[in-house]
Length: 434
Image (cartoon, rainbow, N blue to C red; front, side, top):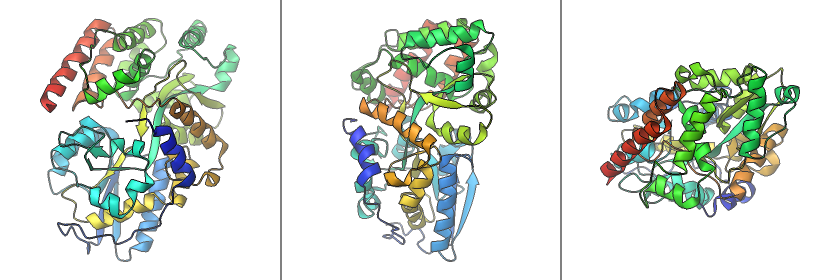
């Protein structure tokens, strides 16, 4: 499924033809308002992020090219869309196009419930299937059960993302430590900070960072067959064995060692990000979506990234999807907007502001920090190392992960108990999917 991922992104960066605007594409079968004068658009990217800047420019281009049409943009919180999308899209109150999380438990679930428009015909007629390498299409296509990797198109990704390690170079220098190249070196670095009275890891138990750290630790013992089994149910998964056992037990050891704050169980991702920005914690294991924010907000410290030491596999995938709700009243306009986001000038905005474009001209990426991020991403791709995300397999699993690792951080549940919670919810979810 991921064999051509490296080729996919690099090829996308290098040679994709980037056809310009397919404005006014084929009318949808349900006549979804080619004469609409409003496009309701929701996304949850921060204004200072690479995606936020790119989508803001896309809106301006769209309105300039669609006389008489107004984009009604509403910025939503990730958690807000994550928790309410099914209910909202079942009503007439939803948007005409929105950004949504990819994976079985999210876009796959909505697709299987008939809440998303099948974009297969548009993908073919507008050339999206040519612009996006096959590996990037993994998260765009879902079968009748909502399992990714095959079936119809229900979303369009136009950037990549992965989990990496942000570090404060000034604090590393002051502590006399180097960038680690193995898990043992990583723990030695954190021990040094703890000995100096510094909590090394920025952490947030109330949202995704804790679950992603657990998954990165599990990936230290994982191979591709495990990832396929975990994400696409090819074989049963044993939650009381490695690599998941190693992930939960090491996470617990890191809590006990003081690598993360004891009160971080109740903190959100924004809190963890601010902890890194302020220099309170010198290390933050999280996604590339923070890169642009840090480039903007960290003005008094030198910082960089390194990939999780020793890992061949890392959480990551294509970026989130543009999806068109089945109840959209302006589907043709929504398709036009997606086309605009794939143009080279928009992709260059992504690439020069800390994003990972999939259809940019390499010569358009001139920012050195952005080149650093793209280089780190390519290191992951060199290993065919994208492992998707821990909450993807079954609906509702994100909340299960959050709850489980909150209890690990506050030490109310031991690793075996955490794994039992995770395994029970996973098995129930897979059984319901059929």
